[in-house]
Each structure stands twice: as C-alpha cells, then as structure tokens.
Length: 345
Image (tube, rainbow, N blue to C red; front, side, top):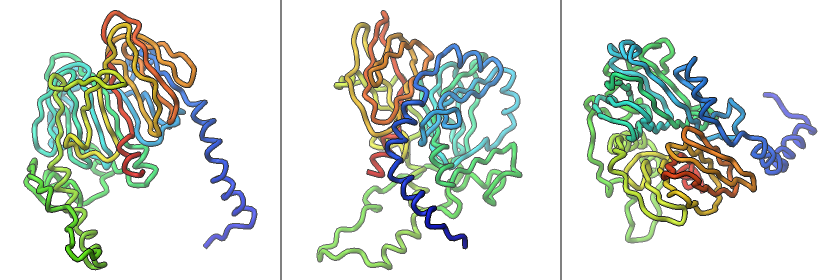
C-alpha cells in the first residue's frame, strides 16, 4: 500500500477547497459556440464528427454531442449486420436528414427527418438508410459520465475481440443486462408499476436488512424490465408544444413521459420571429443545436450570434437568454443533464 506524505494530505485537501473557484475559471475558458461552417468542413473528411466533447476542451462531464453522416454507398457495409453495436451509455438520436429504420433489440422502428430515437442502455441496435440519399443524424450520449465512473462499455459486432461479456451472436439480444431477466429477442414487457414500489407497512417498521439485500440482488432483473418497458421512438410530427416562460417547448425524451433515462433530457424549443426566451440559469449542462432560424444569445453578458447548424454550449449556472432576429421561427434541439442533477439532488 502506498501511503501519502503529510504534504500530500494537505495538497489533496486544498484541491477540494480550491475546486469551486477553479471550476469557475474552467467554465469561463470553455468554448461556447460551435459554428456550422466548421462542422460542415469536417464532415467532408470524416463521417463521424464530435461537436461537443470534454476531449475537445469543453468543460462538459455528463454527455457528448456529435453528428454522423452516412452516404448511400456506405449502406452496403451494414446490410449484413445482425446486431450492430451496444453500449452502457444513454443515447438520444435526432434525424436531421433522410428516412429509414433502426433495429433495436430485435424490433424495427421506422423513422424520418424530425424524429428521435431513445436507445435503451446496452441494447443491440443498428440504423439503416432507405432514403436513396445521405443520412444525417445528431446524437447525444452519456459516454463522458460512464467513462469517468469506469463503467463505459462499447461492443461492436464488427470487433468481437473487444467484447467484455460472454454473450455471442444473436443470443446476446436476450438480455440487456448480463445476468438480467431473459426475454425473447425484441421482447417488450408490460411493467407492473405497483409491483416495484416499496410496500407500505401498517406497523411503521422499516424493511429488514434481509429484505433490502434481496431487493439489491433483484436489481438487474428489475432494471431489465424497466428498460424493455421504456419508450424508444419519438415522432417529430406528434410533438406537443406548449407555452412556458422560456417560450414554446415540447419535451421529447423525458422519464416522466415513459422513457427510461437517468441522465439525459431532450426537448425542442421554439422562438417566434422578433421574440425571445426567458432569461434563466441552472445547475446542469446543456447544449442547444439550432435546427432552424437565426438570432443571438446573451450568455453571462456576452453576445453570441447564431444561425441554422450552429451549436451553443451553456456553461453550468450561467445566465442565458435567446433572441430570434430572423423572419422564421427559430427551433432549437436542447439536450441537458437535468435528469442526472435531479437524481443526485
């Protein structure tokens, strides 16, 4: 065992004390705006372009945000796949251009531009382009969080030598969690919500240690059922926008709507021409991709002009407000780690 020296203990303690002030400086230096021109230029050379990622200097720890392009010719590469890939991170995909379908845990989900897909954690999935043109989609994934926790696992059908768990072939689709409850490939279960709630004891006693232990052992099976019971596809044409102090908002991927996510929340926001959102701040990370429109945002007293295809990265607890200066409604795709913040308090 390596024992720390006296000065090491003091140094480590001071790291805790200094963290808050140093974090403010990291937020100040972190990039805020990613330009559409820069993203498009990189897409000419790479089909998979990271837009927001801590490895690119962004002070964002929960999720990354990227864009993927698939040409018509590339589709042949995926035609023989039976599984695709899976990962122990949450993933929310927004279709920018094209139409096709995804096979997730054996079930086919047709989609078109404007739709979203919420991929269950560790479910085998693959995407197919049927549009006869290039496919463009955006993805937010919680890889940075899982990597920091040491629980990030990515398994691809193409690289079985890097698989961690023993399941091979199509048998792997029987469970989303190694050791979890097996179900037929693509099987969806109906979750009895009342079954998983703690029982109310008439005598006011707390659960016993034995009861708590067996509930802990049953976690994988219960989590398996929750994941399979969660919603997957969001049809863009069915999104319901409502007026809020922040403007017109439609929640898309959200646990309160039946999607099994514990870190990510996704919504779409609209700002009419000449209007603005409310000024606000929050203790969670957020990215805003401009789907349409043009305008500017005031973030901590600095002005950032934006247009279609740009991405805004809002620093944690920074005051921000968006203004539409164009002639059309501005629509923003908003990913945030609000759910993670609410889970941890």
